[in-house]
Length: 141
Image (cartoon, rainbow, N blue to C red):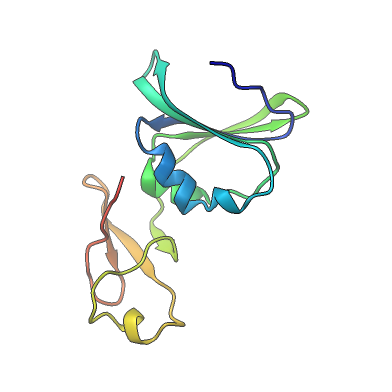
């Protein structure tokens, strides 16, 4: 398979195999008016298999979303066909309006203008909890 290189844009690399589509959805990449390539199950020396997302645009990417879905991913910034920056991602301490609280009794259900805010409460187990009701965030990959 041959995917063209990009001139100016972003490459999200080292995504755990199978998580590329979830990142695509949470980053709202379908809203972009540029070429976006999702490459699934690529053979990798470091990870056995991985996903890659290539965005052929200088689009703003929410690093917190990437850190929530896959903190081992890397983000490469490409300018004029050259790698200008490689960024390793970490789990964010707080997520705002990335995921929604699923507790029907949470205040965010009735007060719809409130932000959905989750805090990292257990880094080892990757657990985020709603700041309003302490409900554990569901991780869907």
